[in-house]
Amino acid sequence: MTIRQQLARLLHHRRDLVGINRRNVELVYAQNPRKHYPIADDKLLCKVHLERAGVPVSRTIVTCDGLRDIPATLRALEDHAEFVVKPAHGSGGAGIVVVGERVTGGWRRAGGGKVTLRDLHRHLADIVFGAYSGDLTDRAFVEERIVPHQTFVELWADGLCDLRVITLRGTPVMAMVRVPTLQSGGRANLHQGGLGLAVDLATGHTVRAVHRGRSVTHHPESNAPLVGLALPAWDQVLEVARAAAGGVPLGYLGVDIVVDR
Image (cartoon, one colour):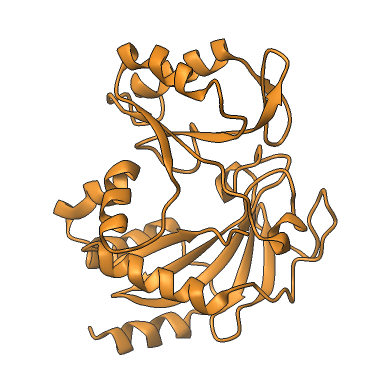
């Protein structure tokens, strides 16, 4: 099936919701050779491929390959007020901790709450023991926290909005903005309670918003309007998506992009 035929098929169902099973069978399995799955499954390995392709990525502050590395990892974070802790594997935003600023005895978490050194030690141990990777040994890593463009700050200031662009054989075919909520803990992940805003690829304007499977027009906490937004740097967003798709040997890809200041 040619890419033109596949795009026509997608357009025929443009008002439908594509379920996970259908997506996996018709797109993920059909377009992505299994031997290349590790690139998509391992965030650190994926960053290597993206950097080689000239795609800008968040700076990695420190990596934690095992329990013995946890003390050094915590020392490396002592002088940082903002950062994001992630498992190398895992999906759905599980295991990601977004830290917003230094407070007495630790840091403030994006979305509320506090995290201490002891909390971070425990969380890093959970990651390397496989709590977010199907009980398989994993690596943890810490990235710089990106300061988003003002357009996205106005949607929800206490978290990081991103854009997910779906590419098929290197061509962007659909896109959405993912917006954090208080419920999602500052993470722009729909499974955790974030918002999804459909984007018109031709114009870069948002045309619909969904929260927990229901259509909405305003953010549940900030009350910011979600439909009709003109997204900044839209042409560059599509360029980055194409470059990312060209940097990995996967025909069907979800590229997550943050527009910063």
